[in-house]
Image (cartoon, rainbow, N blue to C red; front, side, top):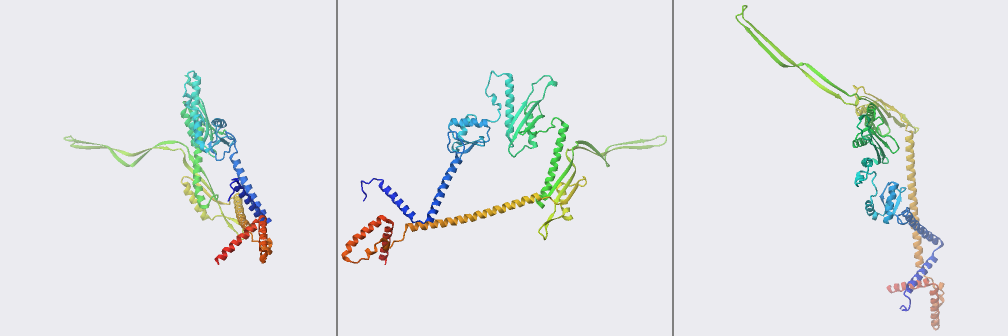
Length: 532
């Protein structure tokens, strides 16, 4: 029974003491190689855990937070791509509210705790943050009785600029925009009245650009929003200062010429794409090239054509007169006269010729030849046969709408393309693929070796632990008890018994593991004998 005066923690201390003793005995039973492997394994595991914890800490707490240097791992983006001034206002409000945050992208992205994301957005919305780019008609929400006429007109222009800016920024391709308006004062003298002018600066989304139709749309949007503003007085530039609107807006003839040239390029590009797509489907990419020169008719003609058909006659009117004379000196007379008016069939046509009709097209097609591998292993270029070239020509004619009566021309030639750069790139990609495959195979082999080595290590450690936990039963000669057990003199049995007990007690203190193994074997032998 346990001593009631023994402290409550004595059992726990004894348990840990026995555990330390067992681990010490187990460690003493391991060989030098096993000790080295076990120590290395434990050290690598500890280093890996420490490195993992350190990496998690550094990746989570890399940025400054509003309330201190707490870890910000797992944060979500509150607002991104902000202006620095606007980001400073948002972080100021976050500091006032005691919210933790993190800055990225040179301070343009603000990240917060995902659990507080919507709460922070509503709190910032109450403060009017983030502010919308451009100030619109909300300038007039508050009435200022002391505002002068000049200030009133200036605010009206600012509000209109802000509204136009917001409308332009709603386009998918536009990231931000600035609008500047110049509206001169109205005068009663028409010859002294100046035209309104406007300039628009556009920043597009990365990798995107405004089309010609979108540029014209922005031009007419601004023109229709400002009184007295003509489209030719609007300049649109990008953030790099490149003029996007037409530079000939103030010259009608130059403007028409520019539009005609753009239409011609669109027609040529359209026909080239049709032919190139067809040839790419037949021969593959980079095996054929098509170029088309289109001659368009930009003359605006309106004519009236009257056509008469003499073979087709319709009676329009007919007049008949009959005259009878009797008892005349020269006898009786009878006269008959007939007058018929005919209408000839007439066709009247009013023809208005549209601008941009195709007068003639000239098509040039270059097709890469064939490559055959000779007996020496080298590839040699071979021209395509005339029958195949004729088929290619017919295909291209049908694709582009070839018309011989219109004077169209086409040339199809088999040439050797300079594919050296393409071949080098293909060889480089093949080499990289081979290297990647070899690296993957090496990684798999190393992983398999590491796995086998780990299994062998675990097996060795398990065997060592098993042997340490179940040591072999020492023979009596090793314990010095053989001469005590083999003694058969009954007169000395009590003395021998006392000596055995003293010996066993001494060995129990010195080698408890060996004594425990002996007792365990005795118990097993006793159970076995009872079964037999």
